Length: 115
Length: 115
Image (tube, rainbow over the protein chains, first blue to last red):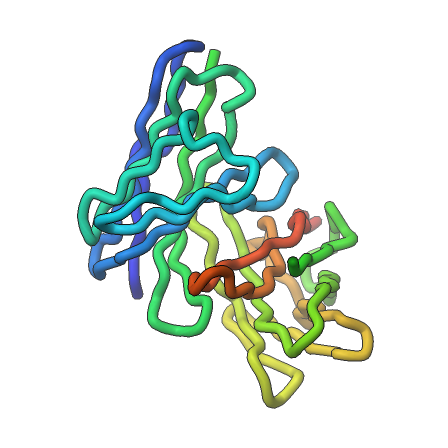
């Protein structure tokens, strides 16, 4: 089946620094990818949809300048958390759509801790 | 906007016992419904989905779910749970938004298995 990877799986950074999370589709191409944020004991909240060759589409309430999304190629999307603060600590998950209705393949997630 | 409610945050059952996880959705037409399982270190895995037709759908790992329009529900069931079923379970509904096929997730239910 289709595989989506994320790197790193865990990252700890200091407040005020930026951190980049990569999402790769390993055996298929994806013109769009989804980025989710999951708070402890909470649902997955869609943050944005990255689009290869064009700007990402952000969900209402998500700070575009805080969460920079780039879809550099048909197999790579990146999420950069800029000037991170402790409240940005969370579990970030990406997914890539498959060919079926609403089909998505999910990455294993990245645990971000901002100290 | 569509929404999904999973009333039970945490459920504990004994190994070998039956399981039912509840899911209620809010949508006017026939929804596209999904159940996913999230295990530590792994991406969300699709258990089953309902689009139309037979209201009782079979999934992987011995799970099934029943779509009940009158109750706006899509409950997940398993006749006999195994210790390996301990995980977080998410119900989701598909939503079309500006051409993109997005998923709206419920809050999740954490399943604990007693030996």
